Structure formats: structure tokens, C-alpha cells
Length: 250
Image (cartoon, rainbow, N blue to C red):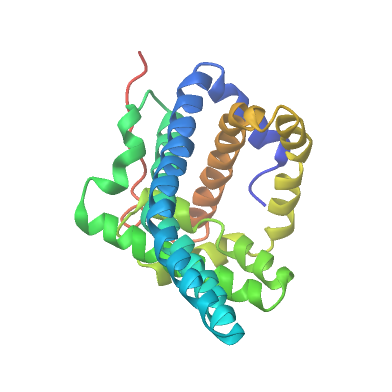
């Protein structure tokens, strides 16, 4: 294995000593932006199922149950599509910003990098939709297969952040290779933040926003180690993973 938990967290803390508030602002804007967009769109989407259920209640019990099922399916589709079109591209942009922040002072608009080019945005949206559908599909088989699949595909958003033109098939293949033999270690890494998350939720959830820079910086270090592994094992090259923009420190 190319990393240890203590090394990743040590490196993340070193990066955040000079950039904590920049990373905090970036992920706060991502969270608020995705939340605001979800609120507006959900109000629009709510109108149709509310009307359907209202009409169904006038009819038979079977029509009412059909209306409820329609609402459930509509919201399920809405959540998946919304995450693919908005939340995941924003997350990919946030990952890019966090990776660039490791070596310099990236502009805040790096968060919007997936939206700058129509071709790369459509590829990121398509890839992340397939990513979400695959994890959801495995979750339906019971929770554990979904969790395992989620860890196998852990690096898909990071690979798309570095190469937004990468196909989902290739990102999945590379992520599965890079997480081979390390899924349990990554799981333990995630568990190591539970205490901080619980403390954050005790403050009505506000504390979680202050935790995000530390978590995201640590995960950026994890991907940096995975990227080094990919090159060392000949799984990828600089043509496919060309790195992130380097902005001079001010």
C-alpha cells in the first residue's frame, strides 16, 4: 500500500495550514449551491406528483396506490438525474479545486471547471449518472454489495476531475484496479472521521461544514497516492492523467 492514515492526515493538515479558509469557502459554496438548486427544482417537481395524488384520491384505492408509486418513482428519477447534472459535477469541480490547492492558490472558479465546456460537462454528467446507477443497482441487492461497489468506484469522481473526457468504463476499470486490496483500509480511513462528524452534528450540523476542508484535503492526499500507484504499476500514464493546473502561491 502506498499510504497510511497518519501520513495522509499529516499531509492534509500541512496543506490546510495556509489554505483552510479557501477550501472551507469552496466546499461551503458547493454545498449551498447544490442545496439551493435542489430546493428550487424540487418545488417544481413536486407540483406534478401532488396533482397526481390529489386526482388519485378521488378514484379507487388502487388509483391512490398507483399515484403514491408514481410519486416515489418520480422522486427517485429526479434525485438520480439531479445528482448527475448538478451535485456530482459540482463535486468533481470541488475535487479539482482541492487537488490544485495542494500545490498553489487556485482561483475559486475552478469549482465550476466541469461546466466551462459543453463536451466535458456532458461526459462528466453521463459518467456520474452511470456511476450513481451502478452503486444504486448494487445497493438494491442488499446494502453490503452497494457499499463494496461504492469503494471499488471510489476514485471515479477524482479521475473525472483530472480528466473530464475519460469514459465511465475506463474510470471504473482504473478505480477498481487502484482500490484492489485497499478497500478495507479506505473504509477504516472513512471511519476515522466519525467522531468529528458526530461532534459536527451536535451543533445542528453546522460543524460539518468546518470539517469538510479536513476530510476533502485528506481524500485529495489519498487520490494523490492512488495516482502515484497507477504510474508505478503502469496502470496509466501522463497522457491519460496529465495532472492538475499549478497556480503560484501569493
